Image 1 (cartoon, rainbow, N blue to C red):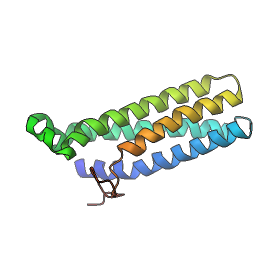
Image 2: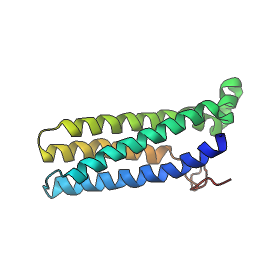
Image 3: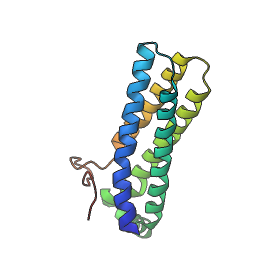
Length: 153
């Protein structure tokens, strides 16, 4: 089950990133072109937050089943290995923060009264969440900790 969830987590990451990039793009163009906040904009806002929540649930299950995390918490000398520290603390804190920020931004944008305010709220909160997610992903080119673009064991 662990390997299956790891592969799913790797694939869903791309869905979240694509939706989040698209949501930020829609928010920016909507704000700067003074567009009306359409049903499509609202649907993208909603499904971006939903995909992030699904990814978070998969990630939390993985966190509590991960041999890397278990080794980190069992052996405090593993603090010296950055892989252990990254996946046990940094990845968790940054991703959890990103999903909380995304959720707050989605809820605030939904409740704004004007279209321009909806777009600006969505743009700011979603862009911050996107930045945190981009920092927290263990990219293949990262000198700190890296994983493949898609895990397929």
